[in-house]
Amino acid sequence: MQAILLSIGDELALGQTVDTNTAWVADRLTRLGIDTLAHQTVADDLDAIAAAFVWASERSDLIIASGGLGPTEDDMTRQALAQAMGVELVLDQPSLDFITDFFARRDKRMAPQNRVQAMHPAGSAMIPNAHGTAPGIHAQLNNTDVYLTPGVPREMKHMVGDTILPQLAAQPGRKAILITKINTFGLGESDTAELLGALMDRDRNPTVGTTVSGGVCSARIRAVAPSPDEAAAMLEDTAALVTERLGPLVYSRDDGTLAEATVECLKQRGQTVATAESCTGGLVGGMITDVAGSSSVYHGGWITYSNTMKAQQLEVPEELLEQHGAVSAPVAAAMADNARRLANADIAVSLTGIAGPGGGTDDKPVGTVYLGLSQHDAPTDVRLATLGYGGRAGIRRRAALCALQAIRLGCLDADLDSLTWLKQVPVTTPQNV
Image (cartoon, rainbow, N blue to C red; front, side, top):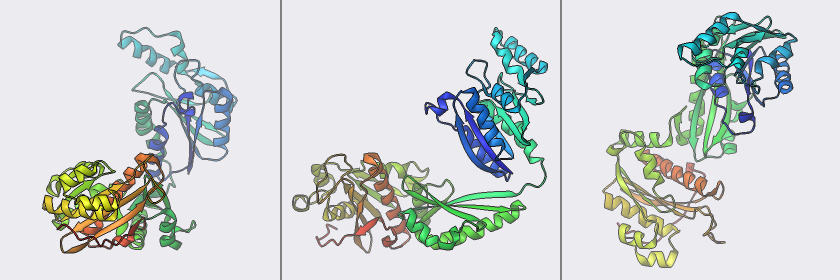
């Protein structure tokens, strides 16, 4: 079974309101083994909505539309469905009684236009709405099941969850579909695809695809099988292959964050960490302390934006700052080494760079970030990242994620070379430790 989801309303089409309904519905349909073929947003235009119903009915087995069931003139979904079906709207007396009682129980006057909410295309059925005044509608169009739901998320979720999904679940012949994500950081999408190789063949089951968001590259795995147990077994086999090929840059499944994975790694290894930040202004420390229980592994950090603070608080030699500049490998090394020593931590990470939009030079353009990683009994590792896209916020966020991944890899005794975004920089300046 394949579904097409429609979101109806000017506020959605114009971008004034973000549509969250279709994502929620698509997720629930997937759990039932129903593929979602497309999402379509349609403005409050009678002919456009009717055309969308016809188009979707010719391409899918199921349509679920949200929005446009209110009492005002711009609520046209029921009328558009009737137009697409070639029938008239008719009154459903039980629905009208319910709506009338809804207002009476709240001691409110029911406006005459609320009567339209009890109307539905001839030959369709009404779906009760226990949480509002707009009943849903179930109809058939070109042998396709069509469900209309209110646009209010709370009302929509109750109607879909309490009525529509149980009806769909009762239909025979459905397959099980399971999906998971393998999250990585530090490798580009094309490099990830190259490592995955034939696992990404489109005729393979489970299918594997890649997606990137905020610098995080995820491998999305989708297994289809006659039963949930078979789908789960297939999913886990492929997840193991994906994890093996992508190596230590894999940090979580599904919704797990890099900060959570880093803190958990430190806990498991019994190690502690400190941070020294310039261009990121405390983002790394903030991400770490967002994780519950991070106090057991995070000793603390420094935000040393100015050279004076770097010298006074982190004891970075002034001659290093004068000779190499604050955005340099020697300064990054000194920041990391001294932060680890002063915090008495096992690991320390430092970041110093140019987040922009100004401040860049030909030698050090905006997005230039030096990262230092200092650990006991290991040479200080300094890496250069060139993150010059995504604006100031994007540069700072990716730099912070680079730091978290570096801490995690250091904790695992893994080589930072797998972080292809970072280029190793030799540091010959004597360390302060």
